Length: 284
Image (cartoon, rainbow, N blue to C red; front, side, top):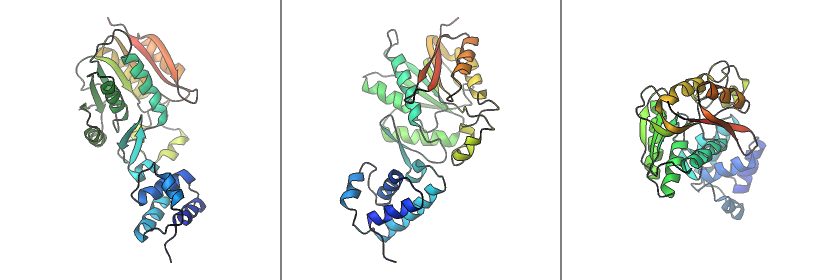
């Protein structure tokens, strides 16, 4: 059988049920081209694929149709303008989480925050949040100290690799939340597991690490633990910011208020959903 052209390969992928954008990105990856080269495919739609590229593309399409995240197949995901390496050891960074980063940066740029703030990212996974904050502080000409925590040795290996590729200096700590963390921070951020363990949506996330997704019967077990532990590691006037589920803002805000946090509030994501909640620790 003759190797297909670019256009024929994309058409075949769509008959398998692939989204056109996914198919284009997979084809570019099979051809060794960057993901922003989609215009190249249009200009070369009649080019015949090298045999190996055609085989690789077909295999990747079948993986995607089976539900494997595109980011795992191509090995990379962009987050907050940074190209991060990802694989099945970590969650795929979501655009919604950029809301948490933007809020964190707004707090770090507020009056009274020192020029070199101490920041802690709990459950760092690929390092997405910590690296986005560190990169943005560097772009602001600041020398913040950013620490990234994860209970998974595998996840920390991924995060360290991303930090090295991006040339960013972070402290990495293997710990279950704050158990092995020392010191106090001006800001603690976290995108912890927040899906209820019985939620049927977990089936669609079967390729991603369950421990980074599910958190007890109501999805709030880890958030409760973080809220209880965080005051012991926050500077007076420091903030705790948490990402949570689309319907959990009220419950998370109540937990923050019960723990003694002030100025408890939420932030909306691009879809207008209350995606993050947080509060200020006055100290004492």
